[in-house]
Every structure is written in C-alpha cells, then in structure tokens.
Image (tube, rainbow, N blue to C red):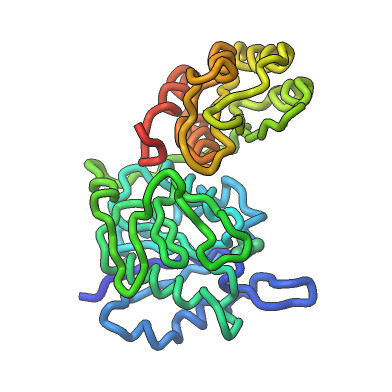
Length: 336
Ligand code: ASP
C-alpha cells in the first residue's frame, strides 16, 4: 500500500514569486505545482495531502506561536499519515527544527523540514530536488525524528544551523554527523538515528516565555548585560567565547550575571564557535562564570538551547529542574 505523507506549507522562498519588492509568498501556487509533478506518480512516492497556512510567512516573521501551531497540526494528523513534511523558509528553519522535537514528545514517525534557496518558479532551482528527496525519505525510511533535509544532507533538526546565505547546501549540524547522505543513493546512518520511542506521541505546549540570547563581544558594557537581564527575562543564552569563557576581569559584568542568577534567571553558556563544546572549568575565565551561577550548554547550538529553554519554561517546572534538564540530553540535542 502507498504511504501517506502530510505536507505543511508555512511559507518561505520555496513557493514564492517575484514581486516589485522582491520575492513574496504566493498563496495556492506551490500546492498546485507539487500536485502536478510527474514524479509523484512513481511507486516510490507517497500519496500526499498539502495544508497551506494562511497567511504564508517569510520565516523571518515566525514566532514560537507558529512552532506550536505546526506541532499541534502534526499531532492532529499523526495517526492518519506515515510521515510529515514542513516546507519552510530557510532563515529560521533551524529554530523551528530545534523546537519541534521538544514539543513532539514520543515522536515515532519522520517529520522533515525543507525549503529552498531558489524558488520553484525559477527555471534553475533547488526546490524541486529538495521536495522530492524529502518525500522519498519520509515515505521510505523509518526515522522517528524531526530532521532537516537540504541539498545533499539529512540532519537532525535540533542540531542544525543555517551556515550559508546563498549556497545550496545551506545547513550543517556541526556537532553531529548527518543522519543521512543524499547522493546517487540515499544513505541513512542508522547508528545515529534515535531509537523508536517507548510512549505514544504527546504534543507538549509551548507558551510565550521571556527568553533571549546575547553574544559577548570584546568591551561589552556590564550595563548592557544588566539591562538585558532585567525582568521579565526568565532565561538567557549567553553566547560566550571558545569553551564558554567571558571577560571576568570586569567585576561589574560578573556582578550583573550573579544578580540575575540570584533572582532565578537561568543563564546558559553556549559557545560562539560553530563546532565543539563548552567546558566551564577549563579556564579561569569560564570558572568565574560558573561561580556566578551560569550553567553549561555543552555542545548545543544556540538555536536548540533557546528552543529547549522555551519548552522547559512552558512546563512550569521549578528553576532547579529547568537547570538540571538543560544540562541533560532530552531529544538528541546534546552530547553527553
Ligand atoms: N526569507 C526567506 C525565508 O526564510 C528565505 C528562504 O526561504 O530561503 O522565509
């Protein structure tokens, strides 16, 4: 029997058309184009249903409410389909791909995000191949994970980052090898894929919480940090240097962090480096941050750490439990 795949089109370049102000989403266009693709007649292709969101969004306009809307949509259609594809703008695709795994607890089917750098309406485009590849993976492989499929790679969603504004291999997962290589054949690295879940899918709520991210830069004024940490901020991803270091000769900077952690603001240290992990004990400039109450984000991407913090605050957990879970691997987002 043919597999069934549910496609959600949220917006993004993939289905845009040129306007006088540049590319903009074009309602109805993408669904019509996909349904008329001759490739869909192949036995390797699933039956598809396409749900186009209204309004279609450039992903620069997406918010956590949109992430939760997608998660609920998957939850509502979960039993009737074998896999799910989310067509999404590339700008914030890594954020959505990082947030969905936390909301989709007990996910046992593939959920694949894809999009394109060139719209399907252009003669030369990467949209067609990305759609066909995502459909092939969703229908033919047993991957109980949220993935991001783009160019020649299948990546774990909560490990992905956008690394190129204009390359057709626009994404990477710097701290985890790809789950699959898309070449002449599609090779899935089963040893890297998460095991099937023990429990049924439960869509976890994502609320509007007050979290943010702040990069350090040489000379950052302590007052900027203090202002950033003011209520209602509940949690901060601090993008620190190297293995998680900061300007600890600046006593006022440390005091700003300490005042905030004493008020139960959760501060998570993630590195500005693309690759590698935070080790707060390696340098005195990291140990001092830990003493100020900052916790390690280990090798999580800032996107994943931000999404995880939003999810944990949405669960109304005690702050100590949020800190404990931030430092544990919940969905394959962190190497232990
Ligand atoms: N601005 C677009 C978006 O993220 C870019 C893209 O889709 O590639 O929606």
